[in-house]
Length: 249
Image (tube, rainbow, N blue to C red; front, side, top):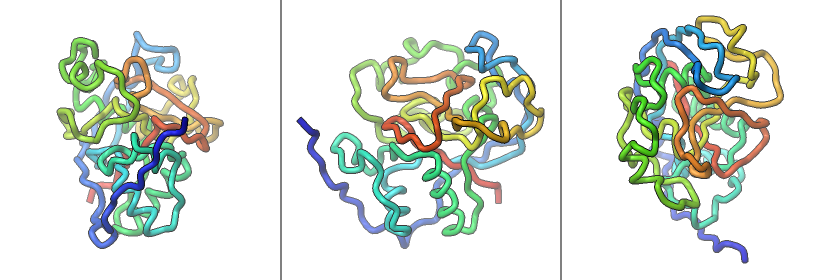
């Protein structure tokens, strides 16, 4: 039996777009990767990133609705699915090319330069200044973290509305949970052995685009800050979303 579909009740927001709420992520150096993680997280290496601003929330359905209204872009899969249609949920099933198009549209609309984060920027932001921490809240295992138990210690069939938990020290909500977030980089499991030390952008070519963060669909819903993931850029999965960054003003 197919799931019921319900058209989201979005009000016209086109006249009110000022860009997403962002938090300043200061520049700095950190140890990227994890000695106790998977092979693609090694070798641990020191990386320095310049300051940038990151959206405090994953891109929501209400944000994507304005993009579609403005550009005529088609609706993503699951858009009318009752489990995914809340305006406050992160938009899902958008591929990497659509994520880039959204950033380009947002840049033209606001006059600010929006883009997807690099893997290095994402990991630095997720750590929130806690160099070497396993998770955005520290080293406490997810099953012992009270907020994990509150949100994820039960059966779920879709992501939650954004911003329900406590932000990390940089003011970012839902880092490492809810949906995977596209990154700008091509993915190469061996890139860390040749990565530059300042603002690494990933390899020049590849078959898969990098992503970061956990997923409502996984057995453990929260990922470690250093954990890497990737899929081909045209794939559209119900646990993939977007978080944008922009150049500081």
